[in-house]
Length: 372
Image 1 (cartoon, rainbow, N blue to C red):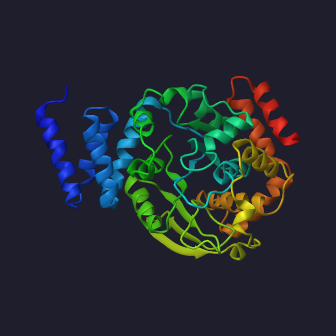
Image 2: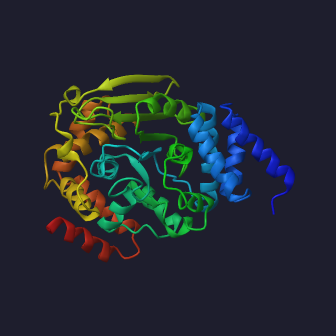
Image 3: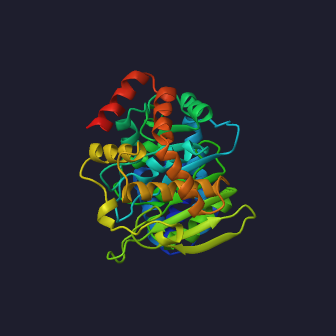
C-alpha cells in the first residue's frame, strides 16, 4: 500500500503540471518509474500521464520518460547486441495521420542486406491497420523466442526482431500501462527513443514536424551518437503527416551528427533521384495480410514502383546514419541494387532461419505470401 507521504509528493507533481510548470528530468524519470512499477494508485497514474501530455513535454522531461522506459525495458529484456559493428535501432513513433504500408519493416530488411546490423523493436498497430510486429509475424518470423535468441539473430545474420507484445513483456509495467490506454502519450513519444538493445544509433520517424527537433535533442540527451528523425508530408493532404521519409511530398528531417550538432533540412523525392508518387500509391492496404504480402513482394523484386521506392529511401536513411553511404541518393542506389540482386529477400529468409523456433514453418508462410 502506498504511504501518504509518497501519495502527496506524487500529487504535487500533478498539480505543478496542471499549472503548466515544467518538471526536471529526474522528477519525470522517477514518476514514470513509479507508474511502471504500479507504486501509485491508478487515478494518480492516469492523471500524471494526461497532465504531462497536455502541458507539452520539454526536452528534459522527454529524456526522463525515455530513461525510465529504458530502465523498465531492461528488467524484462536485459540483452545487448554485441555485433562486429555498431548496430542500428529503427522505428516509427506511430500516431501519424498518413498511414502507409509498413515502411520501417521493409527498410530494416533492406538495410541489413546492405551490411547494417539492425535490431528492430516492433509493436502492433496503434492507430493503423498493421504495425511492424504484425508484419514480421505474418512473414514467418518468431517473436516469442527468448530475448537472447533475438539479439543473437542480429549478431549472426545482421537482423533481429523483438516484439513489445512478446511473452517476455506481458508482465512488464510497460505492457500494463500501454494495454490500458487508447491515446497518444509521452510514453509513445519517449518509448521509441529508449535504448532497447544497447544501440547508440537510431532512425526514428515522428508524426508531426514540431517533434523533429525535440526528438533529435532527446536522442542527444540520451547519449546517441548519430540519428535521423524524419516526418513526411504528402502533396494534396495538408496538415497530415507520416512518420517516415516520404516520396509523396517534402520530408522534414533532423539529423544528429557524430560531432553532436543537429542538422535540419527538407527533402523532396527528386533530390535523391526518385519519382514523386501520390500518397494513395503508398497508403496502407486494407488488411495486415495485404500489407505483409505487398512489402514482401517488393523485397523480392516482384513489385516495383512507389512502394519499393519508399522502402529504398527509408533504407537509405539507415545507410547514411551508419556510414554505409555518404548521401541519401547514394544509399537509394545501393539499396536498389541489393533488392534487384535478391539480397533483400535472402536477408528476410536468413532472419526466419536464424531467429524462428520452427524455420521451416516460417519459410513456408513467407513462400505462401510471395506466391499469392
